[in-house]
Each structure stands twice: as C-alpha cells, then as structure tokens.
Length: 137
Image (cartoon, rainbow, N blue to C red; front, side):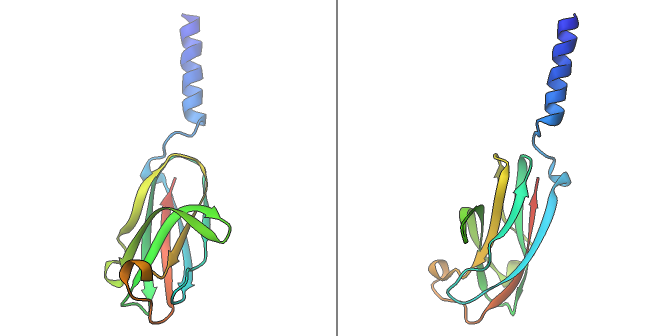
C-alpha cells in the first residue's frame, strides 16, 4: 500500500514538473516587426519554447501592402531560419493563421519573412514592413 502511494506521488510530481503539453489558451504570444526588401529576406526573430504544445504564426500587418510575403518558422541557423514550415500570405488574409503545428522539442525557434519570388513568380515591387505574432507554449 505504501509503495503504491509513493509511486503515485512520484508520477504526479513528474507530471507537474516534466513540462508536458501546454494548453493553447496558456500560450505566450511574441510579436515581432521588420522589413523585407525585394529579392531578400527579413531579419530572423528568435524565441525560446520552454514547453511542448501548439504553435501558430499570424501575420498581422503588411505595409504598404497589396502583395504577398513568405513566412517561415523553424530553428535558427546563423543568419537564417531553417524552415520547419513555410507558407505565403497576402495582404488580403492578414490576421489569419499562416502556420500552425506541434512543438515536440523544447528549445530555440525562429520566424522569418521573405520575398516569395520563387513561389509567386514575381518579386516584391517595394520593401514591405510587417508585424507577425507567434503563439507558442
């Protein structure tokens, strides 16, 4: 009986301290701003993920707009963000989830926006300023 009680306490303590998946409603939101020049990439924005759970990336603004921007999240690799996932967003779908997935490894991650010329077939006409929100555990 005592052994079962001790085992139950050990399991409960591990569950509380081992950092299991975070409820998405408890996620932290990091906001970043930057600029993407034609035929180039924007700055790498890094953030730390101390727990497991869901990640979502939302592009909030593109200015002057009326265009497309590529957005990627992944892991920092020098001056780049090695993409785990990427997508193209347009000025007409701002505020919607651009990327989402599960974080299965704790650590440093990044988000980076870029000129999606290779995906859209035409380069940005002018530099674009943006704001992006990353919700993560």
